[in-house]
Length: 258
Image (cartoon, rainbow, N blue to C red; front, side, top):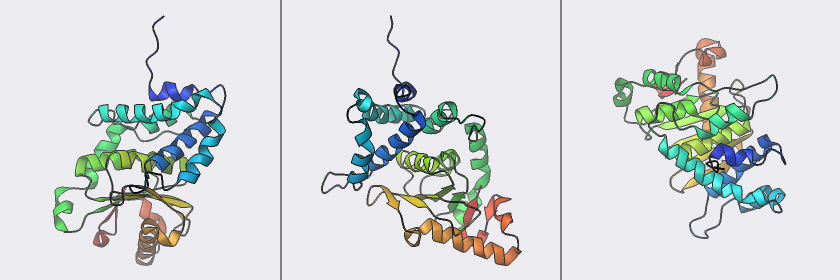
């Protein structure tokens, strides 16, 4: 009998008869973020304690070795699909197809639509009208697919930000942006309709290299930027909901919104 080819999805589904796959998927995201945040001087993750705390439940399970395999396979699949018509959101696709809740499935914007919106959000005039990088915000980022498409169309030198109320989605976006080389970015878990809401944030950085967890809102650049921008629009329009009705927010501050 021909052996089935291993993919990220098949490796992940090996766990389904022993664990809740949704929990395994979230643990995989946590472990991957820890692995992407290694201290170059010590060779140990900045979040070694979190890594060990997450991994401990799998120590006596032979499928424990699937985690590094899944990480490697995910990167291979992403790399092979960087310029494909379907995009390379391997994490988001698995989440859509396998981690649905009964009666409450969650789907993200299809890649072709993301590409179309990315092309219409920033134009040549925007890019050359300012010496500073343009800031792009997706206030309901899901797996970060829209931000990936925008960075692919306009380059990684701009600043990309995402907000989502679901921390699993925030982790997916942080990993997607880091593994696609989008280093001027931050992803925040919170309610985008409530500028004071902050639960956790992940900053993607090249120097220092890695994904860094931000637990205090005062240390989050995205939280400060979002809160201040929200207040400016509220004062100007007396209608905070307009923030989410158009693709452009506060042209003077060069913050673009999907």
